[in-house]
Image (cartoon, rainbow, N blue to C red; front, side, top):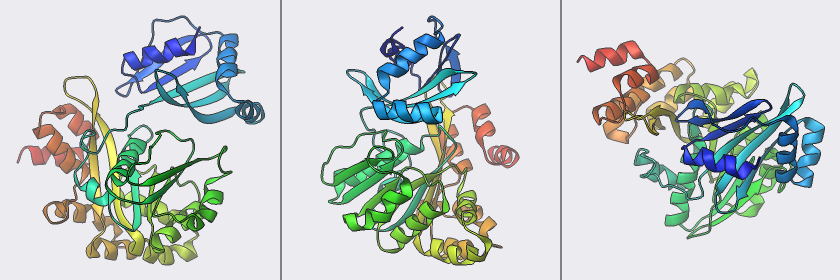
Amino acid sequence: MTIKKILEEMINQGGSDLHMKAGLPPVVRVDGKLRHLSMERPMPKDLEEIANQILTPSQKERFTKTREVDFAFGVSGLARFRANFYVQRGSIAMVFRHVPVNIKNIDELQLPPVLKDLSLIPRGLIFVTGTVGSGKSTTLTAMVNEINKTTHKHIITVEDPIEFLHHDEKSIINQREIGSDTSSFHEALRHILRQDPDVILIGEIRDALTMEIALMAADTGHLVLSTLHTVDATQTINRVISFFPPHQHQEIRYLLAATLQSVVAQRLIPLQEGKGRVPAVEVMIVTSTIREYIIDPDKTPLISQAIREGVSSHGMQSFDQSLMKLLSGGFISMEEALKSSSNPHEFSLRLKG
C-alpha cells in the first residue's frame, strides 16, 4: 500500500480530505460528502509504515509523546497536503487535506470583489471566519496573494502548519511554522514587531494572549489578517470580547472598534450541477455606525441590520443577500439556499416578494 497512490486517487476524484483508519477502505470527502474508495483496507502495520515514511524524526518524537501531530508536506509531482495523525482504539488514524499548489486569486474563487480593496488597506484587523472546511485559509491566501502581486510590502505569516507556499513578487513574504520555525503563536508574535512587518498573517487565534498581540499590532499601524471559527460578524465581535475577563470587556470593545476593518464570514454551498462548491460570503466593513454598535453591547445585535443596509454604499452583504445572488445566478438550488440561509423563513418570504 503506497500513500502516493491513495492521494492521487483522492485528487482524481476531486476530494478535499482523505481519512484512513485500520480495517476501513480509505474515505474521501468530495464537495462536503464522504465516500469510500474502492481500495484495500489498511491494517495497523500498513498505517505504521506510512507514518514512518512521512514523519520527520522530530515529528515522530512528538507523535510518540502526544499521540497526535499536525504537519504539512509535499509529494513530488502531485500536490501539497496538510495532515493530522492521531491514535484511536490503539492504532494510528490519519487525515490528509489537499492544498493546491497553484494559488487562486479572488476572482477565480468567486469571492466578492470588495476583498481586493480590503487586502490593500494599510492598517487594521481583518478576520476571515467560518466553520472547519469553509475555505478560510484559501480566502486568506488569495488576499495575501493580492497584496504580493500589487504592492511592495513585507508580509510575515505565522501558521500551524504552513499550507500554501507563497513566492516573493512585489512583496517580500516570510512564512513561519509553529514547531519548526517558532515554538508558538504568541512567542512568534512577541518578537514580530521587531521584524519590520507591514502585514501580519496569524493562521488562527486560539488564546487571549495571541488576540491581545494581534489587537496591539493592528493598533500600532500594521495590517493583521487572521481566522476565527465563528459563523458571522456579530458572533465574531462577541468571540473576540469573550477571550478576555469581564472587567476588560469595555476596554476591548473600544480597542476593537478602533482597529477592526472588516469581518469576512463564509460558507461553501454545493453547486446546482452537482460538482464543486461556491462560497456564500457575508462581508462586514466597519463604518462609524458599526463602530458605535461594537462599543455598545446593547447595540451589537444591530450589526446584522447594518450589514444588510450597507450593500450599495459600502459594498457589504449579508449571507442571505449573498445566497440570493447565487440563487438568481443559477449557481445553487433553492433547497441549498434555504438550508444555508441564516433565517430560512425570512429568506423564503423574500423569494415570494
